[in-house]
Image 1: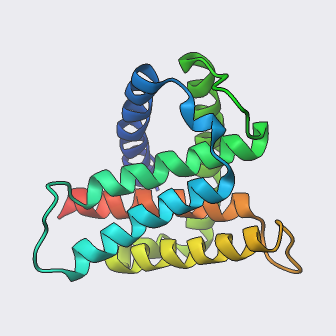
Image 2: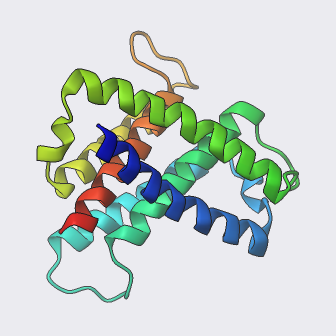
Image 3: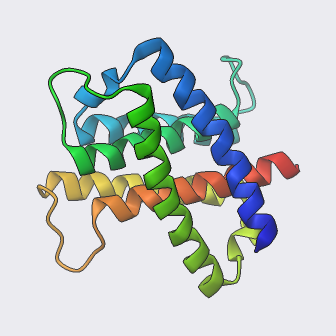
Length: 179
């Protein structure tokens, strides 16, 4: 489990570094995005990963790793939006956004550690393509929950699905780094 924690942190450091740079370039313009818009951005990233995994020819010179980073960062943005709500104008400084990023990744990592304990790190025996499929399945679930105005009868909420997608994407990146 100790290796997993270190590997997880290394992936998140990469993601957070890009998030910080984009905050410097663009500010918190993403704060105007409603959850379905963020969900659709994550969906586009996951579909591209699946295409890269299935297609023999790649026409854009960006691989799976950059798309998984995008999934992680968009999921963090979604979790922040759930907490703070959507705004009409950007309202977060880079420092505030990074504090919220850290808050939500800490909660998400704890969830990973708890599930990892219970499941015995089963993800280590999974394929990256399966993790991609699980992210796509979670996205379809989130879209359905959004279409139901956020109401569920017995299922976990949207936030838990975003957290699972972060963890699946981190696992995929750990696998990709080991290949």
